[in-house]
Length: 636
Image (cartoon, rainbow, N blue to C red):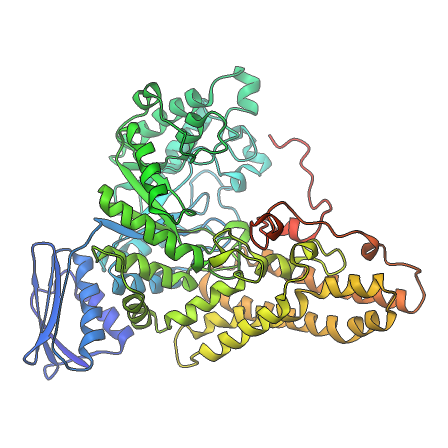
């Protein structure tokens, strides 16, 4: 396809040339004439009588329209598309704090995909992964961005009309900075700052100034979520008991004063206020939670409240919880999720219906700003690239009054990313296994715990006993292979899931087989497993590690990969020890295998016996062993 683009292209030319190069579309005088003009806010694109047109009201809309023109116009038929954007602001939040710090190059790649989708915002979640002058331990060895790198990302995003802005933490979730002994003066508890201290106040002011400087945007997310530890460590020793609400609002006043001095527009997570209003803090999204009038009066109104909700699939839940926020009196922003948390895959079975319900209600409730979070909890085995189908769903929702059809989303995501929707959807089956509730809406993550669990200790064997896990992963491996397209730019994304399934089709139930053979006195079977099965699994783990390493280094900075490297090494080492232990028993050098003598218990009450799925575990170290990985004598 060749285009001849006509009109005032001053603000869009640089971005247009980048996208046309990606799409392998040429420009020339003999190309299809495309007349570009402004509109009153709606996006229009069409082709008729041998001429095409693009009309757009905002810069980012041009790039969505350009993509639609190439997508629909390749066949040469007449078409006309008119779209009204349903949200003023919509885009992803990339988690850049849990080891996976995107390289500038990979960030640019994702920005180009976002531009084709028509998204206009990106939030960079950085707890300590940005430079802070005078604080050498801030982001030390964590792949932190330099100010120049953040400026480069911002400049690139601006070419497409995408507003990039920082999301930081100014209260809690700062464990990776506060762990360093030389900065203990800032520390209240393990992850919370010592608020009310002049040194902390200066630190927070410097954080806000440093992280906002590289960006054009005046927006800043100041965090303040999940600060349950607040005031319960050094602060308590110094000041005695003070209510967490008073501590938090006093600190918020100081943070907002710093933000105002810089002319920034702040937002923050809303959950702590709901937790404090709920009393117990445990069921803060429960329908009984009410915001008291005195609390609402005390909270400054010039900070937007970000209501985050990743789990609900019923519209009524969002309606209720939005109503719970209204008494705060602050402008309300919504953050949903594409579930790449704590897994090798994507929980599309939960992400897509949750997104549909949430965005449908946001439209009705007049919420104009929406984000799709992509958290990297516990080390980021997953990545934002495999979440592009979920991001496409957000985009199509944003340009449609009703829910977008599966067919529309599928057509668009294949055009924008080169990967079929059905191929992306195979990744949900890494965790949507036998024993998981329908669509895995209870958030099971067996792809992770079955890889990392020890074959002799069998931490999760009771959870999956009787479930055909090996068979399931064999089938998923075949389905992934059948859908791969070696010519596609992103086909390599499926190498890790495919190799993981190749392991899990052998490893998932091996602990159960070992226990059964041991209890039955079947030494021949134990020897067969030791000689023929475990070495094959070990070799497959090594191959997975190699593939995962190549993928990681193509997307992320190298810092953080060492964590995953160590985890793979642990699996291989323990398989080697298992072979030794089994052969010592078979050959009579030991008279029993104590690990296999132990009764197998359910890992937790989150299991299929309680109708809660196949199981969930948030932390690698709990998957790998029931014993002590580290012991914190004084967490504060």
